[in-house]
Length: 323
Ligand code: FO1
Image (tube, rainbow, N blue to C red; front, side, top):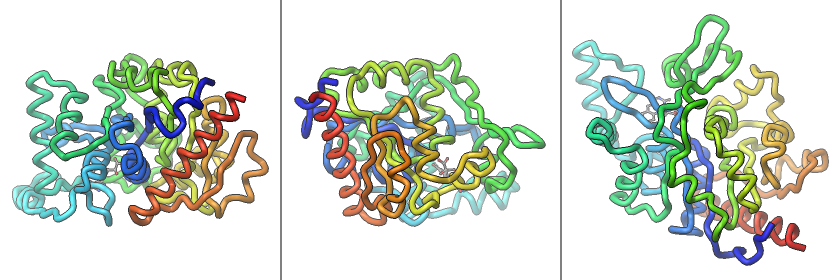
């Protein structure tokens, strides 16, 4: 590893899903500004009401743009729901809530995609318009779709997650299209070793949000070739998944909902893991460097604090590797 020169400087790449991951990405942006690139999952994207919806991408854009609804975690603050009310009146599909302000982004993205723009170009332009300092990069411009395999049927991700409220048992998760999807040039550039300080895997759901990134061929290899610390932040806090169905899905997939299981999931990929102080008892059993710190992000200060702790840990790993 040739990392010490980049300590405190250099670029950082964050791999990110939606709500949980975006919180740390916001903390990282506060510290790093334009030296941060966020590579975002787009396998939970879908076509709905004739529109292209990109939930994780939008969660990152709204969160880093200071526009997100902090209670819900997704969608925009100060939202109104006249469209949904009118849609119900005319017998439309209302299981997926699109706020009036949020709707504008879906309509405009759909128009631009139809006009031939890439998801990457659209995300970059919206990020600029929202005053976002970081580079926001969907992992691919090709379609990848998370499919949840249940005992009875295969469900598109949002059908499973929102319409069915994660109730069906998860047997398996697959990422349709991932075998032919290509990383974008922008993601490749972000991971080029020059000036790269570290890669952070945000505390998103490893199975639903991070695995689809690694399902795209080439990402694993680029990370291995980057020669910088790869630091994962565990989404488990005190044995509980903070947000979403991580716990239930881990149970159903036969994986213990522990930090140790998260570390095992990322084995061979990461150089160290940040865990919650409440899970410190698990640290001894882990076969890789561990840093324990409070990981619950309730406000901007705790997001920035976790970002700083994660970066300092990554810098220490780089310094040790250089010795
Ligand atoms: N999540 C819900 O639980 N219910 C919704 O109706 C819903 C609508 C929605 C609209 C736009 C958007 O960007 C996200 C939305 N989400 C909704 C969140 C989304 O389903 C999930 O947070 C992610 O896909 C999981 O990473």
